[in-house]
Image (cartoon, rainbow, N blue to C red; front, side, top):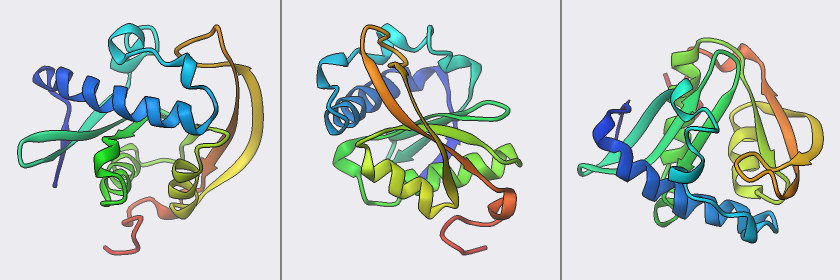
Length: 160
């Protein structure tokens, strides 16, 4: 697996990953009807305001992540590739590249994502309700998580 910076040629790949993973995420949170594609929402949701990285396996984009100065804003992995360490590798890359503590939101019900972030040292600091990012016609509840900087400079898996 290769984690590398996003390139314009990755657009179709990250759209495919996002759309498959977003359906999974929304379904697990009871919000399946709220699905919109990355093509529909990416620009409005600040996709390209984030520093983006992609995970590639055998030349295929299988995941991507993005972060801003203080937040993990995107992390999606092709559901066919879940539990293969791709999400962890992307999160590890984000933490290393950002060099600082970050926050993020996880929809209530998305237990797989919550477990990944908590295993990386993120802690729930709040639970909020409001409009669903990306499709504001729907109400949603999310956990707000924050990590300490104790993991920075280390592999999330505990390896150097």
